[in-house]
Image (cartoon, rainbow, N blue to C red; front, side, top):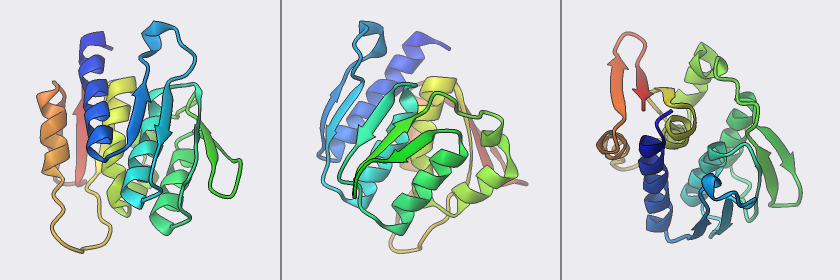
Length: 178
């Protein structure tokens, strides 16, 4: 992977998190500091989905608290498990995540792509996957149809950081690389 590109994508994640009014302290792993992520969040669905996706940025264990027990959040947690992330429920609204054995082959499977298409928040997996593994494959996300919620904002931002996008119309799949 290209450290410069990863740094730019990592910086974009910081911007996304700060934009969501979260208090974020992110320490780059090259600083050789054990704590990667400390976050105080509101417990709102969209903010939590971003944080859960960010656990893919490290192989270290990450604890996230104040996670609401709602369908979209639970579906993303299950998707992370399916991807090979070790997930443990540590309290009524607390989990630990350890993404040290992410199954990159599963990320190309029809099962993964089908699950992504049923969860609109799966688009937030792209940044962490590209930042850490140099690539991501994601189907066109579905989810509810309430209001206008464009995906191109996410895609344009990641492209401006140097990622390349390809769309396979036959499979309705985006392929993203660093």
